[in-house]
Image (cartoon, rainbow, N blue to C red):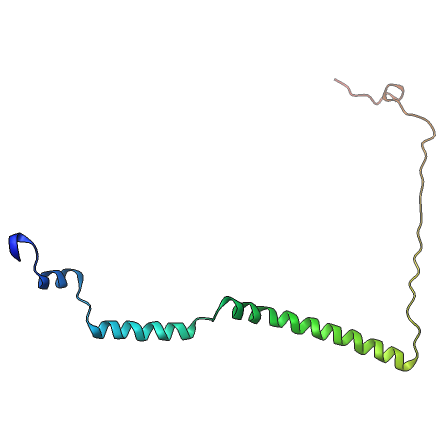
Length: 107
């Protein structure tokens, strides 16, 4: 014990663990190693995640352009779509009243 019952410097270092320069050097080295393993900035992460989608979109556009060029070379006519629309109208011949039919609720 130190003066007036307070712990001495040695006692404090034993209680809380004294940090040496070697410890700090090891920690700094470990921090640097962890920084290399971590991804970069948010912009880097975003560009890496968007790159596959951009490649797929590019391939799709190139495929459409190649198809159009192929059709133009062989002289194909543009495709025409026809659509048939069928309309059905149902008319009720007379108004049905529940009291007339006998199908009213029974209690």
